[in-house]
Amino acid sequence: MAAAVAAAVLSLSLAGAQPSAEPGELAAKPIPRNVDGTISFAGTKDDVGNWEGPPGTSLANNVFEDALEPNRLNLLTNLSVADVPFQPWARELYDLRQSSFTKDDPHTRCKPSGGARLFHTPYGFEILQLADTNEIMFLPVGSPHSWRVVHMDGRPLPENPPPSWYGTSVGRWEGDTLVIDTVGFNERFWISREGVPHTAQLRTTERISRPQFEQLRYEITIDDPGAYTKPWSGGWNIPWDAGNEPFDYLCQDNNLDPARMVGPQE
Image 1 (tube, rainbow, N blue to C red):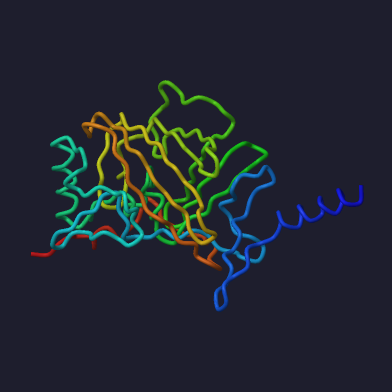
Image 2: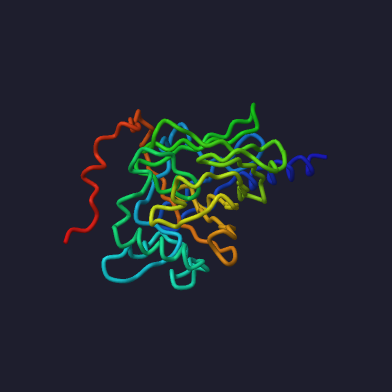
């Protein structure tokens, strides 16, 4: 009996132990978990912060003179723009937005950022996991006073939801990855900062994980038969911004700054 108790204590001790660091190296911070065992996307009482909104990231790599260049945070699996399955009109619109240096981005007119656009919003964003309501909320800082809700109660996607900026989202866990399906978008935002177009037929599947304490991995699959010939995916890694907390950012429809957003000069 004593031997069994000793073995159990040893087992528990080993289970809670952290791997030791190599000489001269710091041990990796453990990834926090919620009471139900799911990954937490928040900080801890000793590590306050939120997630950055890396501005140079893009869903597709576009390398030519005066274009947005691939960011080091982009996923290695991202397509080049030449391989994105655009329909002709969508590629033409994408090129127009690039040629004008994305000056007409609705985000700069204080509009909510649907799709992947939320995940490279200035000043970062916070993720709230609400166990009491079975919801996950995304709170972007550099945007109008808006937030995105993901329902985690097992409900199906609605058949014909009214179109909105963020669409209607339902989520589930696949291991330690949060998977979010969304339908019901309006056509008034850009999917991402570089001007990826879409139609009201858009359906997205997002996969969000936390492979390290200081890193999120974000990937989105775009399924929009109105703009593309087949589904395609892209994404980026998102750094943790230690010590940063949301603040009251004011951006409303009477924004006076767009007059200075003139694009390239002749």
